[in-house]
Amino acid sequence: MMLKRSKGFTLIEIMIVVAIIATLATLAVSSMLRSRLNANEVTAIAGCRSIATGSQNYYVNITPHAYPSALTDLTSPASNPAYIDTVLASGTRQGYAYAYQLVDSEHFTVRANPTSPGRTGNRYFFVDETGVLRANSTQQATVTDPPVE
Image 1 (cartoon, rainbow, N blue to C red):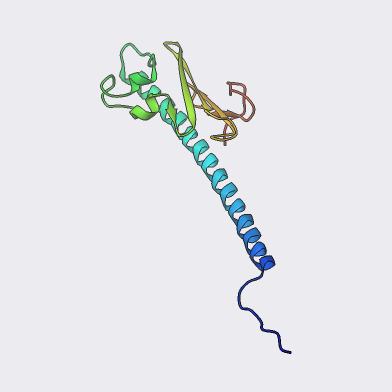
Image 2 (cartoon, rainbow, N blue to C red):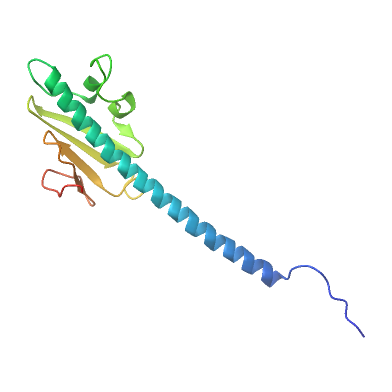
């Protein structure tokens, strides 16, 4: 007697294909999330540098010399030209919260902290009137943390 062979895939074959697809999807998603986290940190670095540069330009162009009292002082219409955009002046951009503090007319600090540590960024950033950007991976960065290279 000849047995009739049916066409199609067995359950084991289908399960192996599904397991392979699930593994590939997991790798792709984790890589994408890591890329987004890195992009957020690069944007935070650029934001800190923009605020520091804008504050220096503001200081040079105002008489008597003084740093801005708030981030909104670096945007139009308070500044002409605007030194930073309104999104950055709002204090939040791409997973980071920016905190500007005027210490006195000759000193300021800027901190960029991830809004959800571990999800939107792993590092905390700090810059002051010296323009040296510093980072810390466990807590808010300060003037004593190592510079970003």
